[in-house]
View 1 (cartoon, rainbow, N blue to C red):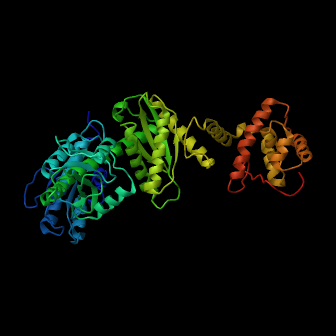
View 2 (cartoon, rainbow, N blue to C red; view 1 turned 135 degrees about the horizontal axis):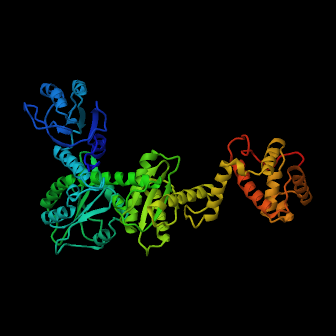
View 3 (cartoon, helix red, strand yellow; view 1 turned 120 degrees about the vertical axis):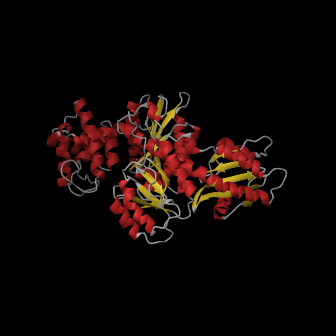
Length: 551
C-alpha cells in the first residue's frame, strides 16, 4: 500500500523552509503538488538526470541567465516541480514568465542562507515524510546535538550547552573532568535557564553581539557565549564554561566556528520539530472533532488523558494566530516536567492541549501547569489568559467530552470574572450544568413554559417586574421578607405581585414540579435577557431593574 505521507507537498516544503529562507515567486501548478526530492541543476548539461517531481537548486545561476531561460521548457517536460535560486537583486520578471509557461514553480532563496543549509532542510523534509507516521522526525533529520556539544567542548576546552531562543537546553557536553557550577547543574537538570531580569539582560546583550561574548557575571565560573544564526534569523546559542585555564583567543575563535556548524543542526532540528508539531496538531484537531486516530499514529500509549484549554484575549497587540502559536510553544515547554507527549493545536481564540497523564499524577498538577503557563504569559507575552481543564478520560473516543468540559469551564470563568483564572470541571460543575441547560432551553422552544414566555413578554411590553419578582421569591425559598429586601420593595408590594402573577399567567406555586421548572427557566431566561445587547422577539427581552409605573 502506498504511503500517503511519502512525499511532502510544495506547500509543506515552503512551511519547512520558512519565509526567512525562501519565498514563492511562481506556482503555475499550485502548491499541492508532491515533491519527490531535490538535486542540483546544471543548465549546461544537455541531458540531465530525471527531474520528475524534484526541486532543482540553481546554484550560482542568475535569474536572467539565458541558459536558464532556455532550459525551462525542457525542465517542464521532464516533470520538474520547481527551481530554487538566489535572485541577488536581479530582475525576475522574465524568469517568472518563462517558468509559468513551462509549468515550473520558482522559489527565491534568501541570499544570506548557505546552499548547504537549504540542502539539509530539504533532506530533513524527505526523511521526515518517509516515516510511517506523518511528521515524526528521524534521527538523521534531527542530528546529534550531544555529539556536537562534546566535539565543541574538546575544541574549546570547556563544558558546552546548546540552547534554543527560549533559553531551553537542547544538548550539553558530558566529557570527563568538565568544570561545573550550580548554574550549569541547575540549568541542565531543569532544561531551562532561570527567567530572571539578570539573565534576560545577559541574553539581550548576547543577541545584539556580532560574535563571541565573554560573560563574567552569569555565575561563579566565567563563560563564553555566541548566538547561532541563519542569516539574520536567531536559532539559539552556544555556551562554554571556563575551567581552571582561562579561555584565550583561540577558544573564542573555536566557539565562533562551532556556532556555524551548529546552525545546520538547529535548522534541521527546528524544521523537523515544526513538521512534527503540525502533524500532531492536525491529528489533535481531528481527535477533538470526534474523529479519533489510532494510538500508534498519535505516538502515545492509551491511558489517562485530559484536555487543557487556554482562552486568548480578544484584544491584543499581537495577532491572534501568532499569539496562539506562542502560547502553544509555552505550553509544550512547561508540560515537559509533567508529560513527554503533549500535543497542542490553536482553534480560533483557544489553545487546546492534550496531556497524557501517568496514573500517579493527580489532576491538581494540571491546574498547577496552567497557572505556570498563565504566569509566564503575563511575564513574557504581556497577555492575560483563562484556563479550563476537562476531566481525565481513558480512551480517545472520550477526548471530545473532556474538550467540551474545558470549554464549559472557560464559559463559566468568562461569565464570572471575579473567579480564579484557572478551574477544573469539578470546580464549576454546577455552573457548567446550568450553562448546558440554558443552551438546551434556548435552542428547543418545545420545552418553554407558556407562563414564563407570557410573563417575560408582559414585562417587556408594559414595564412590569413580574419575572424578577417570581425569581427572587423562588430563590428565597418562598420567604417574602428576604425576597422583598433583595428587590428593595415593600413586602406588601411584593405579595401583591406574587398574587397577581398567579392570576395573570396561571403559575401554580403549590405544584413542586412546576416551581422547579419555572425557577430553572426564569433563572436562565432572565439572566439571558439582562445580558442581551438589544431587545428582540421572543425570550430575548430586557427585564429592567427599576421602571416607573404600577406593577
